[in-house]
Amino acid sequence: MRIQSRHSPLTAATLLFLVVSASFAASDDPKSGGSLLVERGSELGFTIPQDEALFFEVLVDIPLVGETGLGEFKLRSGTEPYKASLFGAGEGGGDQAPRVGWAKATASGSCLNYTLKHEIRLRILPQEWPRVIYRDNQAGTENRRRELMYGIRAGKPSSLYRRDGHCQDVNCKLPEHRVQETWLKDEHHCGNCKRADHRDWRKPSVQEIPAGGVDMLSAIYLARSMVGSGLQEAKFPMLDKNRWWDVTLTLGQEKRLVTEAGTFDCRAVKLTPILPSGKQEKFKGLFGIHGSLSIWLEKSTGVPISIQGILPAGPLDVGIDLRLKRFRGTPEGFASIVD
Image (cartoon, rainbow, N blue to C red; front, side, top):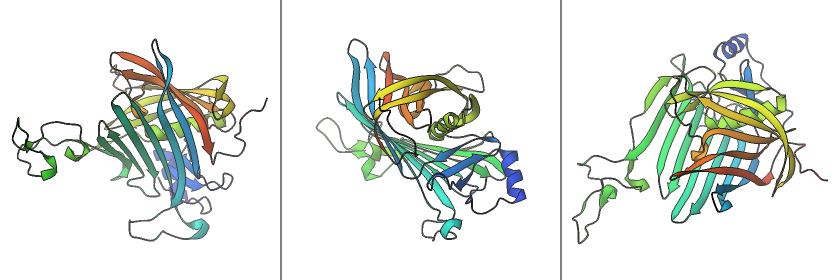
């Protein structure tokens, strides 16, 4: 994968590499106000919008209670100049400068004594390794960190995954990992808790992956492209921690949805994941949503209006609906229907 400006031509070698690997390439899209077009060889590509912000209410359908608001979901995206290192200057200049596409999804809310702030960050870079950095951080009552990087490593599509976990070293002397003395127990190393400062990074795992794989957040933008192109079905590997699912996106029915943000004519895209091994296991997607996802997108621009799925809540599975309530920076043509 080579990421470059649309204004600089593709070489024959680069074009051949894209077709063979079906990996990402990205370029500025002159028709979309600075958005970044992420191409995937002969496969369906997607666009990272320039300075877009979507705000959703989180609604949960609780048995015997009904639909209840539990928090907010935000999805922002943009592009920025590429820097080869943290302290380096951007490469090139003007229209020729390579750019980075990014997206950030944040879910926050509370129920009874449980609080959640869950953030996913995505960066698509103009380099072979890592091409994509995907970070998943949860804070609040429970704390955890995960990081997935993927691209071309040693000439092969590969990924690196790492996560944190509670420190289990009984000989650990870090003062932040110790619990103060109480009248019941002397000062000691914490055995297990949900505090963020008691967690350490585990050893990363590296594996080869199928060509053309994407992460969970990029899959949302692929669904947007499906609606815009009118494609009925798309299949691709979707990376999840240190493995992948075979995912099928299917374009479904049309429906008019009424939200706080307005009224929109939408198309459904269903995301169905299956493990390549054939093993039966529930898929756990963005922010803990399980099973198949139904994404309702405005039919002319592909902007998400509603994301629906199942959320485990103790012994029950409850329906969850992320429903658009306000927006800015959306593509031209996206507007509420006026009756």
